Image: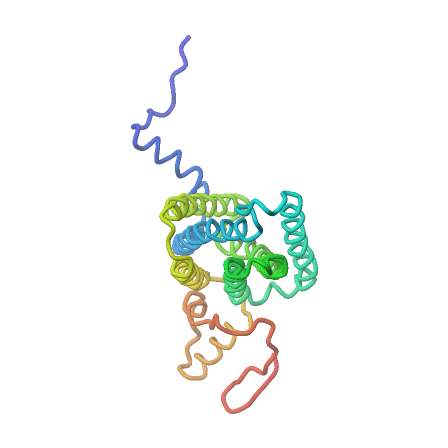
Length: 278
């Protein structure tokens, strides 16, 4: 008795593509996700690429500033400074987590704000190269800022992934999205390691990578299409209806939403010549 396969074997090229797809796209793609999934993941991957590259520069700078390259500093002092730095970041993360219930309304604004905070933290870490004597306070502040950004980013990640899932595949969408981010991060890290061997200008490298990271982050949140109303999207819908008598579609309303606003801002929504609170 011989088993006969029900499906014909795929050509080698198609087998390789199927293997790659099993790691980077949800099962049943593209029917298992919404149409805006591809633009979002493209910009997300690019953002993680720049983030991975930035991580090499910040880690190298911190290690140099803490005294790894200086023989006069004992390993015990280096370890204590590093532990204190990480501990300050964890405390900041814990304290900021109290704001978690407010993360559900302005997902895009908070996600972009978290990436801005992340770059500010990276900038402070790189500044320790100029002021190594102030390593501990500067590194603690940078780590607190970056951990606050991490809490915000993590808290807004699942609702955004949920907007792309069709059916009960939120777990698959999340897993593949994180896989894409990790792959891009590794590629950025590898490229940055190659670049650092040539000792490029720290300021120039930070400026270029930071611009790429924030530009990718902006387009990432711009590509998100949420099917709920918050203050910003409600304002867009009402303003469009008053001016044209037309209510924009979900995609149009999301594309016109203002990203550069202060999250949790409580101001009246303007409707025509009158003001009301919603």
